[in-house]
Image (cartoon, rainbow, N blue to C red; front, side):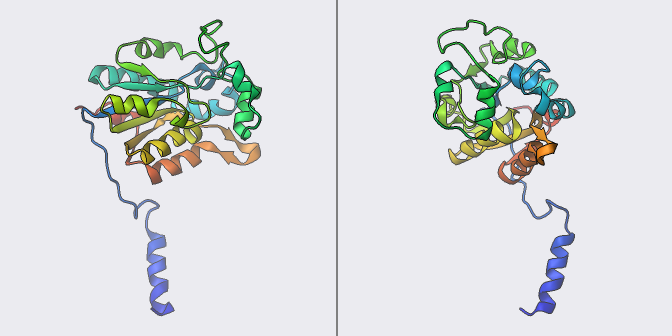
Length: 241
């Protein structure tokens, strides 16, 4: 093919809308679908949390706290099982011999710290605790709380086991933080053979302008490229089985 034919094709492709060339597989709610929420905890979602200085702007803009509550309510009403994948650090986790950048940050600021795997000493109202408005839903029979993931993805907890044991193969995913734990859960669940949709405005991410880092835009790019569907919360709560 000569250059005179290639140039018009390239110009045409460049003129298309950003996502015009991507298919949309779609996502349908059924009895094999679950809601998965990562890290709905104070340290991520409250102005009292240790990460608010870097995630607060994104949480506020997306109305993440409100949207997560709407998802909990919807799942309870629709009898869609909810799985929570939390993040806890115990004293022995602070003895690791190496860490990634944000692992080091989380350890240094005492994020998600708990006294002991078998103790709830000083847990109530701490950064590791659930946001208060979510407790009635997380503590209900409709919700399964998984063991904690330790870095970002579910490879280190029992989320996949719990999903499989309940006959779940489709997941609606939301929570914190968007470009880390949500993104990592998305990738691993896809590799494990699950169909996954993400609720973009029920997540939020760290934004560090001084370092030139925008976790929210990074997360959204990956959601659009990897998931079967990127929902808004209002779209999800209109779904019925």
